Image (tube, rainbow, N blue to C red; front, side, top):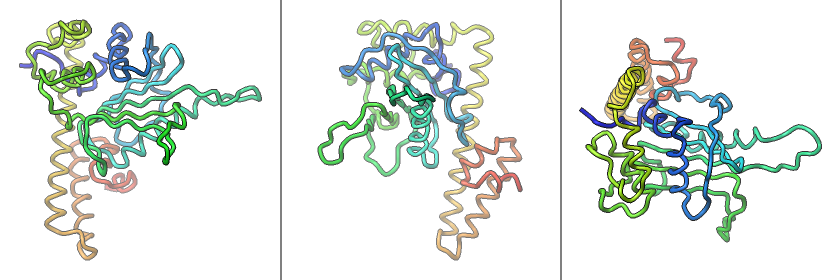
Length: 290
């Protein structure tokens, strides 16, 4: 049995990064992420309802929305499965937060606060070189000089991190090692080097959870595993049937039949329509007709 919580579940992720009482953990992580750039002293958690909703978010995406003492916005997100147009979704997500800063009246002069998106991904981004961290900024294409510091994307590709404990060189890498391996660790490393890991160990110890917290965590683990199992099955089945039928024009109808068949099975299992849409690629309208 695991000693520590799984940080890739809804309850686990928010236990670490989403509690007001333990917000120093998120502050430490963000400062280690942006070391040499800025020093965040305090954050305020904001209502997630201020953010737009997206198809397929439930069960696979968990996010934290906060601002710093300087008014900068941070969206810290965990996603366990690839999503169609994921980068475009991230762009829309952050742009929405930028646009919300607009004020009515003649006096406002577009004094925007920076918006950062930090995306933990349990998958690899497509069509770009695979690496642990991808930083995206607004910059001049020719000179590479930063054009504006008001929009920043930081994608953390967890499968690309393969270092062992003794190979971690920075505090950021130590955070990633702990998060990626937490559920299998018997103790948290790096406590002698950085006190935040000693505090983290106490917070993520399953034995320290209250009865209510444990019940919520157990349910969160079930949802996490069920979603991964269902998504994995659907992807594998769709891939095999798609390969068998081929993707030529003459066989496209066969692939469509496979999508509909998988959607019917998932719907019968009670899976939400938005998640079925993400898995199969079918529209909400097509799923409703089944």
